[in-house]
Length: 172
Length: 184
Image (cartoon, rainbow over all chains, first blue to last red; front, top):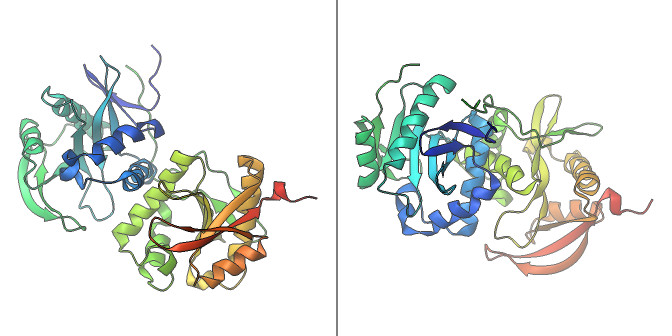
C-alpha cells in the first residue's frame, strides 16, 4: 500500500492528515461563510490566510495540530479535526469543523473519535477537553455523542464566551 | 496499517536554511523563540511599526504564523541570533492581500545600533539571490520610520513608487539588488 503523505490517522470513511498549502482554498471558503461564526469567523481572505498560516505553524510549535479531513469515497476535503493549543488556551483541545455539505452524516463524530484515540497513544494526551462557543448546538451535540461532559464556562483571551467540555479518559 | 507521520514538539522546519554571517546565525523560527517574541511585542515602543504591542498569547500566534508563512510561500522570516541569544528576526514576507513581498527585520531594543539589521539583511538578500533566484527584493515602510529608510538606502535600495496599503497608510516602495543582481 502506498503511504499517504502526512497521514495522521484514518477511519472507515476518512483520512486525517496534516494540512498542506493546497488546503487553503477550502479553509478560506469556510471562513468566508457565516457558518464560521462559531469558530471566530467570518474572516476575509487575508485574515483567513493568517489563520491558516497559524494552523500550519502550530504543528511545528506543538508537534500536533489540526488535521485536514478527507472523505475517502469522494477524495474531498470536508473539514478539519485535531488538537488545537494556541497561546492563551488552558490545555490542548480536541476540535472539529465540517465544511459546507458534509454535515448530518456522523463524520465529525467519526473523525473526533479517531483523533481522540490517536492523541492518547501518539501524543500522550489521554484526557482532552473541547472548547465550544456558546449557542453552537451542533457541536454540543457532537460532544454529547462523544461522551464528553460539560465542565465549566470559559472566556477566550479575545473575549469570546465558550464552554469547556471534558472527554472520557482514553486508555493510553 | 500505514505509519503515521510525527514530528517532535519544537521541530524547526526542514525547508529553512541556516545562514551564517560574521556575527549572526539566521535560522528557522521555532517554539523556543516564544519568549523573545513575547518580550519584543510587549514593548509598545519597540514593536510600534510591527503591529504591537501584543499580549503573550498574541505573540505566540505571531510566531506560529511566521512559521506557517514559510510553508505557504517558500520564504519567510528567519530568527536572528548571536551566541545563542535571540536578537530579532529578518527575512522576506508577503502576507495575503498586500501588494508585494517585503524585506523585513525586527530587533530587540538591546540589539539596535550595532549594524545587526544591516548584517542580517545582507545575508537575506544574498539568500534571495542565490536560492530564490530573485534579482531584487522590495521593501516598504511608513514615512516616519527613519531607521528603515536609512537601512534600506545603505543596502542599495532605490525608491520605485508609492502605494496606498490595505491598512490605509501610503508607503514608499524601494527595491534593493540581491547579491546576484550586483555586478561583480
